[in-house]
Length: 171
Image (tube, rainbow, N blue to C red; front, side, top):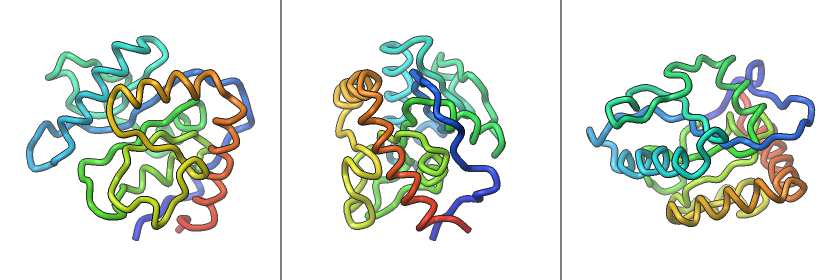
């Protein structure tokens, strides 16, 4: 029951990409079970990848994390996904088959997606075909390094993910 607007979210011409992006608002732990994990993602990726990591979203400064942009409208968010090598996906919940429409927006822009392994994702998606999952912060960091260094493999998965989003999630 989610989709994306193809008028904003579409791929850009191929170019060498070597950055990682995470678009996520920080709502602390106010009723969102994975908020702590999202904070750990932001801190760990900023520490590991420094200038190659960009964070977009609200309320990060309270943890001493400066977001590259606090509010990204549809046009800016699409630009970010079109220009990145890796887009990180981690929603606030780990419900069966649940991820926000952000996952489809990332895929639609042609971004290679590294997603947290949410419950029953494999009912709708194929691991290593539509995106790649991670299970822990060290696993996420290792996979970021791997896919930054394996552009051809990264692009093949991103292309299949884009095709899946176009065929299954447009409005």
